[in-house]
Image 1 (tube, helix red, strand yellow):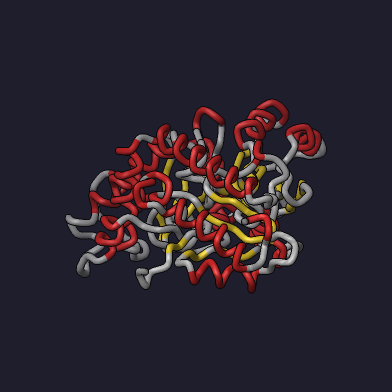
Image 2: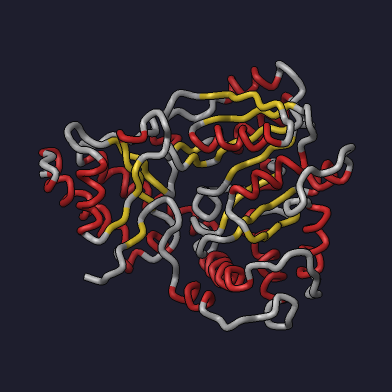
Length: 380
């Protein structure tokens, strides 16, 4: 067995060899002719992947930086934000918003449930919200939120409210159509279904949101995340011109560029379909083992990952090391209320778009074998 264990967590994921090779390039000037068109084309490719005519951003940092960029640029102190909270990352996004003086109202759902459209509609009637945030896939629960349905409700009940989607665990594996669905901001990162190593915050921002930013009344209370500094940079590189505010992560962007080209070449609609197919396969296998998913319905279960309760008598310290011994790295629980009770498996990127690699089959077979080794009778 190879010394490398398959990284089958909900991100970082397994990376294509060409993506890894792009990370191995020599030192390169960030304002040189070999880099400028790479960042410029990456911005253009993101428009295709997000189905938007808006402004993409590619900035050195984690997906969390996207929360800061959203909060500091679009929300002013004292303004209200409705947070559709389906798990750990709803809590954290709310904390980020409050750091910049926003008043966060959390619309919480029971663990494993997704935000209810009627509840969103009712909440929007209570006050004027500057923005609504939705975690498209909460990695802590594997719950998929209906961003299209929620955006429809917002347009009907409060059309001025900005629609912000945390798509860190969804962009590249779940259907997102920014312009057609009326989404103003999508926040994501490089290391999940976009298929590149960690290190880049990736965003798509609508023209409407950019205008809201330009019309704000108070200064942006952040230096690095301030769009006043980053908008000229993105515009310059897209125009194939050098510009400088802070040094971009050159090799990370080379790698992302390769992966974005692969995604577009594959066909985005096809990519959505193969993630659904792989998810259905994984979840049927899990069900047939007698295991229970954290999402209470397949209708709102993510296609790029599965969150699964341990069967009775099996714990994280039993199962996860056995999976690792079979060459598979899975993740433990993350939601603070149920963390010891479940585990998480990722199935996104090349592990599903290139099934000939055998990643998903190896993972599911290792899961069954590991459960047998744990003494779980349902796996026999």
